[in-house]
Image (tube, rainbow, N blue to C red; front, side, top):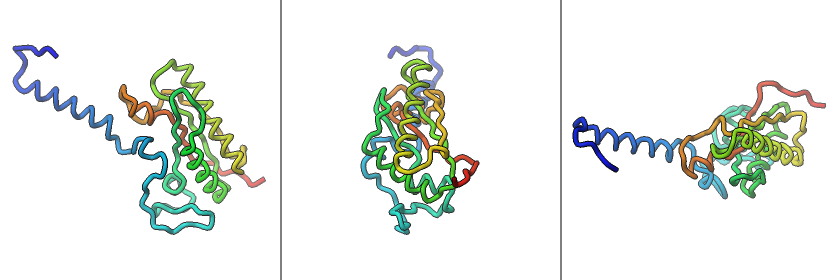
Length: 186
């Protein structure tokens, strides 16, 4: 890197500090990377499991989004250019299905997402296939299709932004969101 000889005193320190902060923000954004969440994630629980094997991991009120996130986890991750469910994603979706069967009045929206690489159109289609794969899996687990809606955001709503595999892998996801409208039991 070439530096200017007439730079403002201290500007070099500010540049280095800025780069360090940008790198830290990209690599430490508060959520664990998918690699850390895959397999058997370590989660503190109070071990107050319910009759179907789900364990409450927080004091969130039952049936709320916070309860869903902590009990069943709301995100599954995908490999690059794939809508195939990984074994880890299947385990998470089994937990989601269990929770949704216990909370039968909840309606969900499954959001499909992609990383920033590729065209907008390609990523919208890929996000749609990811959301549909999740919906199909949950339906096969006994969640009624009438309770599920899918939407694709492609690369438009990243969790993290940086030009690195650590960011891309976190953005390749399907996220299950509880909707505010309850469904009738038919």
